[in-house]
Length: 173
Ligand code: NI
Image 1 (cartoon, rainbow, N blue to C red):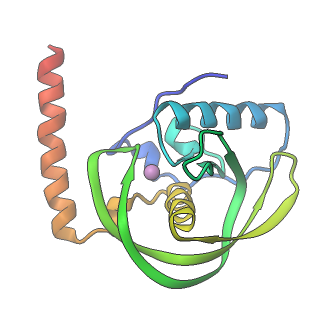
Image 2: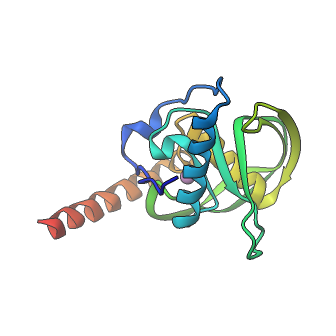
């Protein structure tokens, strides 16, 4: 178990669509543990495997609802099978530094996923929980939340990020 480095935009690794999980073995459980530890250390509301450079369909979500107790949820090969109503709310991403923005998402979902042993389950999700699931599933498809912003907002962010990265580089010299 280890805290992994989170890959950030514009690294092309984040753009590659992941492969489905077909082997439910010990290494999958280790990957899930790494994802959970990395998510809590960040801290973040969710994390997809390709954000730590593993091209597999698995995400973890912090389902603690603000309680002290940690309740990580692991979703393997997740898919959205029903969706309804739309809602706009603020979103950020561990892989997109220094940006939060309003994004439209479905407010209600029915989700199908497997657990770490390959067992399939279906469950409903609403509001923030539904938002996190949609955000993480986007990651698995190589999509980032900035792709869902207006072209103007995206261009402004890219310009600002360039300056941030330049400043970081100069600071490192
Ligand atoms: Ni993200």
